[in-house]
Length: 493
Image (cartoon, rainbow, N blue to C red):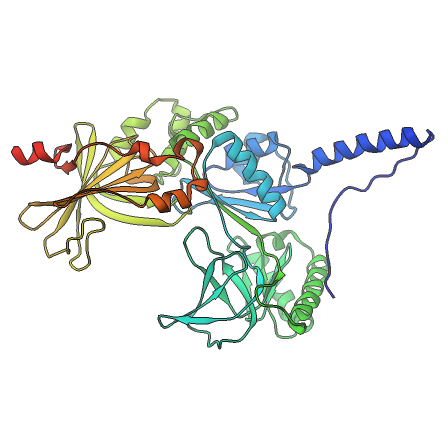
């Protein structure tokens, strides 16, 4: 038996009018309810460096904000609300966007609003987080995989021994874009406060402090152990606000659901239990500037606030906010010295990190030297990387392309690779979102690469980047220690 939880409005109408009048009033009530249901029934929890701006927007859009951070609650005059959220928003690892996770209705409604206002990069996972589905494992290259209901592929960790026969899997990490997910032959069923699983043990959200862990641990070792009969339990962050009765009631319901899932037959590819929807939302400089404006309406906010927060400056940005000085460009240039990190962010959220040493701003371009590890081949150029090879990377602040030029041990130019991307931000972290189109320059000539991949994922892009081909620069550009030049003129000099 499957237990279905539903939510909505309950209204009582008392009419003295005739049938027609009752119909008109009911129709009007339904319209009001539907408009309210589009956002107001959804509770959102927002954390991270975009929390103030996104909380302000969520309130304007009619969402209910729960468990707000103390500083955000103070800025916006929010009363405490410990309710569990329908959707959670937290920082993406690059600090240049957010991850949105929750019920599909709530997450979709919030992302749609953000998309309409900010036009960011948006990638939606092909399947739900903790989705339970039936699949048959297969082996490829010594690893085991299973196809997901959404058409993606999930890898099965090597610690599990699996055979090519149908069984239930839980998606711990769903596929996003071309990235494969991770699925395990275990069952995880989550509620609003806790999660039961077939792995065993007691686990806690990292947001649960020592005192609450002690209280919840006593409950887990006592009544929950008797109820769950050897199953594992994980307390979600909202569990710290819940009473014992609520936790036991939910555990009892989840236990019944888990037993029901494991006791019936499932067809190949069938979803036994839907998971939460996952979105990766990335902000380019234009979107961050709009978020700066929103934040400035409720708190002192310096221009470039969110770009500076992505540089992991912490409370230093708060000082700049209150100073009110327009120093973003100078601060970014000051940070772009010595050892720096280049964050090449894919539209679906994967981050390729490259480290190097900044040689300084030359003719308005930040030049970075990177030492290359021998072995492998330079992408698009086809030259094997030998000992002593190095790259010079040129990043012009705000430019929609980055030039990587490769040199051998004698300093001879081997070739260049031009990456097309969202306008680059500089600092101790150079950040941009890859638009997937590239231009390779070698002795064999010039080639534009990955147009098919860009077309396949163009729906992830902001409208202004839907045709990245128009951003490809002309000529045989090369990065030198003096900035960006043309290869021919560089060779002549």
